[in-house]
Length: 335
Image 1 (spheres, rainbow, N blue to C red):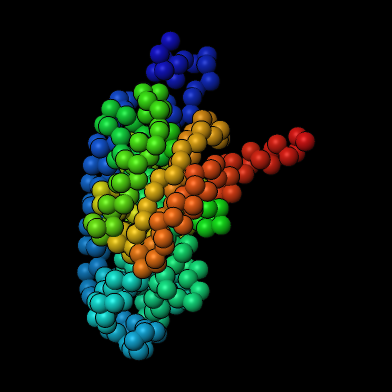
Image 2 (cartoon, rainbow, N blue to C red):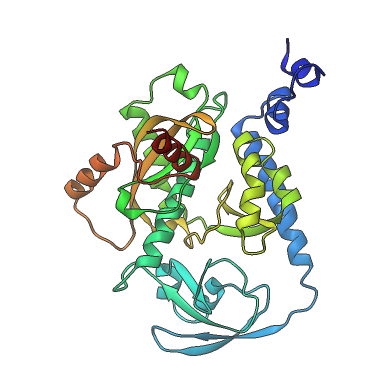
């Protein structure tokens, strides 16, 4: 019996609507999905900018190097990155993430009101915010690598990545690698090829563009991914507005994240995909892809990096996703 007949048979319990739609229609390639998502992103971005019919001015009080100052910027249009353009090139290049009214803020997210502005970078005495932002951004980059690193006939469905945990030793992304795992073994040669994609991003200096989407737009954007589609309602309920989904675009790669993410890929120095491990999740069999990166401006001997990469290659269970945490709790209860 076909999947379509199985879904419509009144004597059989219908399958989940998301998976039903996913399997009944022709699967698009990852390249086709990226093209579709970018078209929707551009359309929604243009629509939101068109809502700004009158340019209002706001005061941005900057606190930090080289000296405090007050900038007059455009409400709903100007971003912290635009602010750095009015101050100093050093601030443009080194800033990872901003703080607006004491709250972490994306460098390319428009400012909404009169505010205070601080800029965070890696060479601070306590770069906690910068490190977490970098780690989260690297998981996002892993998703880009997985969607672009295989041939078009190999479908990769991204699932999710956890909150940053620098102490875990590696950033991760869980994904269904599809036929990539059956056509050939993901060996050291494949890992080097995937690593090269991440390493080259630094020279491309691609910005991480944030955009808030209504749930209906997000559902259309991610309808080709059965895992993302199931997560949308929960993600929207946990967002600031309780009804929108925050997505980012880096180059032509678009994915969901509550952020914030770093300013651009120019902050990447060394990068390596260190390992791929099969794991069991609430969504079934997945592969946990792990990586390691060093931010620009920080010097590290190649031997030390190799030692860190060796640790980062081991299965990372400290970076726990919600569905894995739930599974662990079930096991503990049974014991």
